[in-house]
Image (tube, rainbow, N blue to C red; front, top):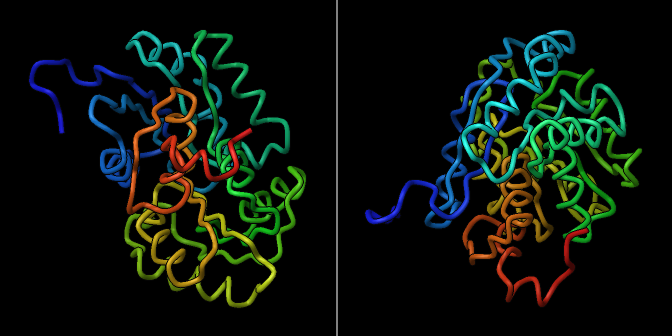
Length: 257
C-alpha cells in the first residue's frame, strides 16, 4: 500500500536492467515489496534466445543503461537475465557487477550471482535445475552452477519459446519441478531461473509438496536487493527464501554470504 503523504519509492528504489519486457517480473515485485519500496526498470528488448543478441542488446549498452538508472536515484541495480551471464562463464557475474558499480557507485548484482547467494543461504548444495531455456543455455547454467561449487543432481528444461514464457502456468512449472525432484531424492533444493515466467507462483506449491527450498530467478533477484538494502520486513506466502528476510527468520537459519 502506498503512503499518500510520501513520494513513490520513499524508502528504497531498486533499479532493474531487464533483458526484455517487464511483465511477470513487475507482478512478482509489487506483490513482494513492502510499503515504500519501488521498482525503477528499463528493458533492453532482447528478441530471442541468442548469445549474440544478448551482447548487442544487453551488454554493449550496459554502462549507458546503468548510468541512466543512477540518474533516477536508485539505491541498487539488479542486472537480470541469467543466460546473458552464464553463456560467458564463471567470473562474468562479478565482472558485470564491477562494471555497474564502477560506473555508478551503486551496489549491484546479477541474476545468477543472486541465485548462488540464495542457494548458499538456504544451505542447498545438491541442486536440481529446472529451466525454460534451449539446451545450449540450459547447459551453460549447469556448468556455471558446477563451477560455483554446487552438485547438479538433476536437471530438466521445458525449452520454452522466448516470447511465450508468460504463457507457461504456475501449475505447469510446479508439476515439472515436482517430477524433477521425485527423480532426484538426493536434491536438497531446486533452482528455477528466469523471471519472465511464473516460477515465483510455483515456488510455494513445490515447497509444500516436496519439502525442499525453491529458489526462483524472480525471488533471488528481489531477495538480494532487499537483503543488501536491509529491507528485513516479514514476507510470507512466497516461499522460504523471501520469508528468511525477516530478522526473526534470519535468527533461526543460515545467513547469506
